[in-house]
Image 1 (cartoon, rainbow, N blue to C red):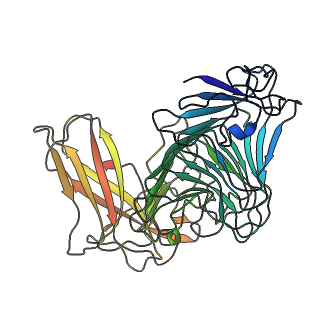
Image 2 (tube, helix red, strand yellow):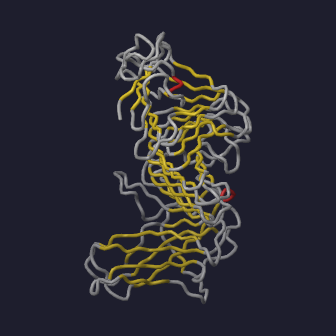
Amino acid sequence: MANKYLRHGETYCGDGTTSAAAASNGGVGAWNNINVFEGTSPAYGTLAAGDVVYIRSKNNAGADITQTMAASINIGMAGLAETNPVTWIIDNGTVWSGISGVLTYTTSGNYSAYVRPYNNIHAASNNNLSFVHTGSYVSQNVFLRFENANSKNIKVDTSANNQYYGMYVAFEGVSTHENITAIVGNRRSGGYGFFAANVSETIATLINPSVTLVTNVAVGKGPVFKVGNYNNGGNIIVYGGKVSGAGATTGVPLVGTDGYSGVFQSFGLIYPATMDFSSAGMFNARYSYITASGQDGKFGNAVMDYFYQCTARFDGYYPTLNATLGDSANTPWSYMLYPYRTSKHNPAKTAISKTYTQSPATKTVGVEFLWANSFATSPTTDTTWVVVTYIDNTTGNLVTMSSYDIAASALSSSSAAWSAATYGPTNFAKYKIELTTPSSIKQDTDITVLFFSKTTSGSASDIIILDPDPVLT
């Protein structure tokens, strides 16, 4: 393992061992051709597994480096193993003082840059490694592909793609991408996405991505993220970051699954409330699910699978009752459930909980919810019910109770003071479910309530609003 150096455009090609320009071919000094980064073996010296290669971000004339892709290219060294990767660093003045430029790969064709396995590419904080697609109309194609390869601070720009199709970034294997900046033009409608994990046994982790959707044309409203593969799944995990721009709007989904099983999870990724988390039409595989938390910049969260969607955002303006976020303003919040494919076998389900801080005692645990009047039927004990669990104060055992009753009795109406009994065009009826514990609840333990509903929506107006704060009386 050693540090190596590359100065593109210098007169002589050195052995790569120092940051200085070589005085002769094969002499001590930096390599002089960016093709080493593109997978060509250096003319002199040795590139070995475990090396760290520093690339000067301007050429010998002091200009930024632009490489035009006339064909697909490889990035990095071939034949590496997970235990000994090669790291490529686009320097912005740390090694070469005062030299801070940008290395750009550009093309207008259906060409891709493939980052080979176990090559890590690290740009500076100013995204001084960029991949720019300048074509307006292209086939849906991979523009940048990572296979078991990590990245940091790179920029991908497909803003010129303004027709039906668009280029995308593909992930294969296990990889992590920190501070990736994406300026995104068109995406193909349907399950195709800009960031795609569509190869089996893939887990791509994105940390603090910045995604700007620049266009919102009638077609090409494909999702930002696409997960799923027919074999063992393609998965994406996102920590932090933001999706914004003119294209981040109504009718544009954040995630799609394209008919195959896959998992998407985000923690703190912010996207506009007008965007769709996903859509029922993108869940043609029964084994996919997607989740998000903190997507509103606070404590909102969402889950969606083949059967139903449950979401909560403080900026969703759903009717609220008792639950607050616990922030300085005690912002009220609630869950919205959209059971678009539920059935007797696969109900919608949501867990809520409350810490019991009072002295041990028996309690009635109540759950309040709003039921859209547009549903074909009213809720009954065999279609909508709760399961309550708590810790018994005497035995320390977990006690489980259920309100399910096959007799199909009508549920109790409620007079709770919700903030509203309407949401958009939807009018609601108020309901509650209550269960009394047969024994005392142990102090400072959690009471968990699982809410179930089998009733299927007939339209997008058929929704349930659930108060996440159980009432104890």
